[in-house]
Image (cartoon, rainbow, N blue to C red; front, top):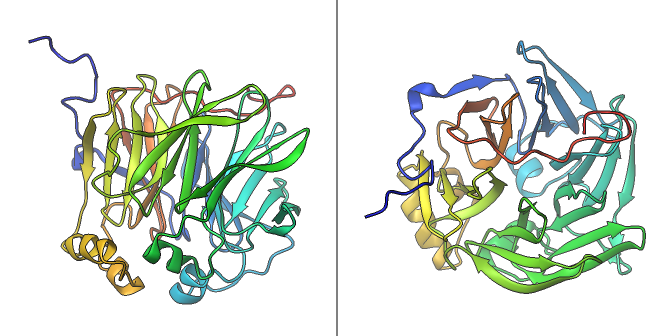
Length: 343
């Protein structure tokens, strides 16, 4: 038998090796990592938290937003007020924010000055903006989880009303529609394919990307049904797609051959009832809360960082700090800045 050459095949995260950075964070769902160790975390107060390599942190709030208390139902279920979700850098090193609370794609400078870039598409309200990223051509890609309000109804009933939007010199347009609870989106190393987590139906879907941004050849990547609900996704340099399974509180990797490797398991006793309720379309916030793990409560995103891209940071919906550990493989280099800045 030929031994596997995938470095993740016989590797799992050692809990004793998990460290934490940050404190008193609010909903650190998405994390941007710079190679000098600086982290930028989405924050439910309406902005981002900068965490320096020495652990000191400073909050940058959106000047157009009001700092609101983060009560669970009002802020996380009804999503009132600003609720930054997905983040990426623009070409100048400022922030593009997919705001799950304001249902908009926003721009925020490092001084907090903010403006709305997109809150309607095809003449209709945008919906629940989830994640945003740029490709090497500078085009902006945005996922919208659902047009349903409250969004929890879409999770419970598995409505296929999410989509992917592309913003380029032609403007904003929908390039993939009819998706189920669209979540994070990533490109592979050569940007030939785009991948998105369809959370409620437990799969990662991919398309071939045309030169003009059209998407074709839709197919599942890995199993058509994953052992949990995928949220954050990120590629490593060996072509493994790391995926958090939110509520199931697991970190897994889908290999290039489609196998699923469990890298970290923080599942709770409530996960079994969550799976049953999910299958029977009777999910409630209470059932979901019973799944809350101890490492990254409601594990949401995965980010590679550090000078060698081997630091792995886990975002979460209910955590107040960021767990991190070392990976045996580096992540793909992120799309950072241009115009003379970190590229």
